[in-house]
Length: 231
Ligand code: SF4
Image 1 (cartoon, rainbow, N blue to C red):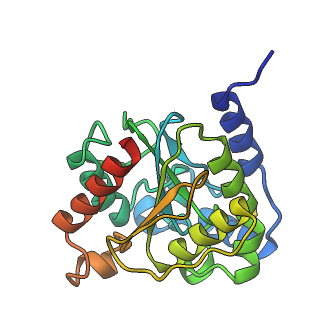
Image 2: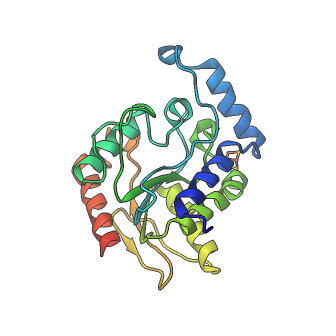
């Protein structure tokens, strides 16, 4: 019997969650989970690789860099439970991609339509900076994921590092080195058989509190990516 893409994604998720390949990141994610932030001391931290989340029939993928220490690494869902998640989910809701404007924990009722949210690196890195080797080690999971999404048309990268990871992922899929310079709102077309890319600033407090990225600008680029993915 043929295995559906939904079953393939579920099997890949199981494999990712069990991964312990990067010793430095395994130690870091578990240390954070054991020590906890004082305000979350009653939480049982996830402290494992954080799987992707969303609509398996999506034509649009949003790509972040890695889970946040007390966001995804705590809650076990990508872009969940931290200020970046709050900003991004409110924007997705305005763009008609999410059924609610908040993303707080795994059982909060959030449902995404037409969009699948993923990350280039699945374990929280110290200082939010994975090494190039850690990025290379984790990348095959993303390549596999993108190949499994049957309707994929657009990958929207959130931030410079996710942008480079998306370029590398599409290069792996294409079998040739693809090039592009990060420009917020820019669309990158690489030819038949490959998804387009869209670049956006990351919805981190560093960007949203300093005016680099505001809600209208993020909703605008999300709407642009959504329209491209449905065209
Ligand atoms: S970062 Fe990726 S490859 Fe490394 S341990 Fe986590 S899931 Fe595995």
